[in-house]
Length: 100
Length: 394
Image (cartoon, rainbow over all chains, first blue to last red; front, side, top):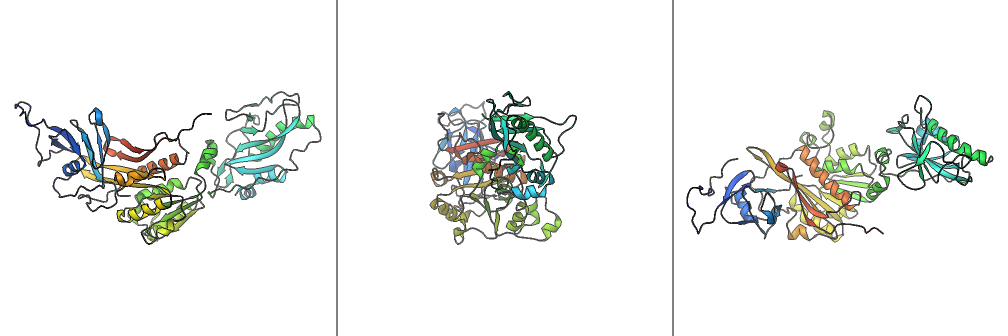
C-alpha cells in the first residue's frame, strides 16, 4: 500500500512530541495509509481522505464501512453527522454503491 | 399439472386406472383413502405419500423404498403395528414405511404404491372382507396448481413444503436486469411466487452474458433481444409467471408497479430512484435496493456490496441515514462501472436471503434493514435494525 503523499506522516517516535500536537494515528482508507491527528473522524473527512486529489462534494451517496476500530466503535457503517473514534490501522472503505 | 403429469407417465396412469385415488402435491404422489387396521382392530382410511422421482415430467424408478403413511398407526389384523412401520419424527399420526422386493428396488411408482397398498390394506380386508381399497366417496384432490412448469421435487425432498408456501402467491418486480437483477431472477424463479415482473429496456449483449446466470449460445447473443425477453424465455421454461416489460421504470412509468407486492430495485440509474421509492412507499410496498461499488487498487479490486431494505414498518433510514445513493450530485470521482459475476451473484443472494427472511422462510432475529459487505475482509456490516420477529411459545 502506498503512502499518501499529500497527507502528514506520523511524527517519528524518537522526536519529542509537542504537547499541543496530538499523536497521529494511521488509518487505512480505500487501501491507502493516511496519518490522522484528531482522535475522531466523520463522514466528510473520510471522503476527503479517500479522494485527496479531486474536489469532491462529500454528499450522502457514499457507503463508508469501518472495522478494526477502538472498543467504543469497533466496526460499522459511518453515516453523515456522526463521528467515530479511531484506532491505529483501522480500515475504512469508501465507495458509492450504485452499480448493479 | 398433476393430471397431465399422471397422464404422461404409464406407471402413474395405471394407478389411477386401477381405481386408486391419486394426486401429485408438493412433489409427492398421494394415494388417498387407503383402508388400514387400527390398534382397536377397526378399519379406518389413511393416505400414502411417496416422493416422486422425476426427470422433468417423466417418472424415474423410485430411488428409495420408504413411504409415509398419514392418518393413524397402520396395524395388522390383530391390532399390532405393522412390522415395516415406525412412527415418523415429522409429527403425530405419521408413520414411515419401509419395504422392498427381495434383492432389488421397486421398478416404478406403480409397483411401489401397489405393494404398500397391499401390505396395508390386506389386513383391513381380513377384518372387513367387504371393504374396497379405493374409497368410493373420495373426491379427487384439486390438481396441483403451482407457479412452476414442473413439480418442485427439491422442496419436497427437503420436507420444506410448508415453509415454501410462505413464498407463494403475489407478485414480485425486478427493476433492472443487469448482473445483479438477473441473479435475483435466477433465485426468485425457484420460489413459488405467482408472478415475476421484469423491467428493463436494454438489449442482452455479449458483455451481459459474462455477468448473468447461465451460458447463452452465440446464436442467442446474435439475436440481440431485449434483456427482459431473453430472461423471460430462459426462466419461463421453469416458472410459469415470468412477465417481461421492455421498459425503464421512471416517473412516467411508475404505474407499472401499481400491482406488485414486492420490488427488487437493481438498476444503475440513481436519478430514477427517488420517484420509484416514493411511489412504493405510498403504496405500502416493501422493497430491497441493491448496489455495489468496486475500484482498482495496487493490491487488487476493493469494494462494497450493499443491500438496503425498506418495509412499511421501517423506512426512515433510507433518507435520514442516506442508505440508498440517490444521485445527490457529488458523484464518486473515480466512478468506474466495474462489476464481476461472482459479486453480482453474491449481492443478489444477500438480497434474496433478506427477502426470504422477511417472508418467514428463514428466521429473522436480526431485523437489519441495511447491510454492507466488504470484499477485502469478507465482512458483513448490519445496521438499521427493526425489532426481531419472535413468537412467544404458548
